[in-house]
Image 1 (cartoon, rainbow, N blue to C red):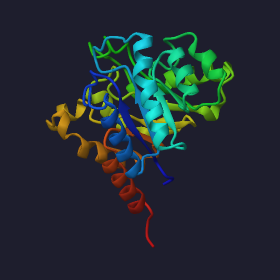
Image 2 (cartoon, rainbow, N blue to C red):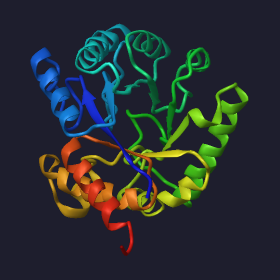
Image 3 (cartoon, one colour):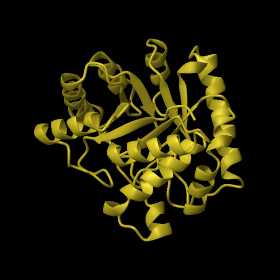
Image 4 (cartoon, rainbow, N blue to C red):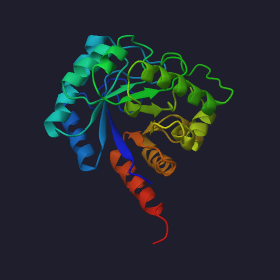
Length: 268
């Protein structure tokens, strides 16, 4: 099993579902980044607009005022750590890249802002495209699929074909099946059981399952008690070939992935 990258979530929003408002202050932000770096994070993902179910959009300037100081804070502590900018807005990406972000993470898969492809073409940053049925404000109303895995794969085939046709190199594209984004418990479990099916498409695959509400439906765990289930799922996804795991608690997932790697080595 090749090394899995652990992406640490750094939300600078007042209303994210599990950590809203926790890292808005400069001191708290710095301490969280230091903790992630100490625990072996591979990528830090910065977001300034909540994408929880029924979330309202944030104005562009307000989003910039949240994420740029966070990018600067990370860069003050590490010049080398990759930083992904989690946004659907082209200008936010452009400004973030100027200040040190290195990866584009667009939950709309470059469908929401028509200028995003122009920004993407003008740089060489990797691009994470996510599957979502609907939009954050309505995605959990009544998600329906005939075959969730097949339909997500078809979506990725269409999106990657379009991106490559627009001049985006294949090796820059990363796929995120979108756990919790327009999916029921059964849909989420089907995705997690079939990580290898997404790997068949020939791209890196990111799984973003951390603290998601399906764990409460399945296990009865409130949001504050979901880091251990998240780490266990991380290990299982790593064994299926997931390339990037996007999580809140870096330490637990790094440990879980390390165990999965060691136990997957076979006899010695």
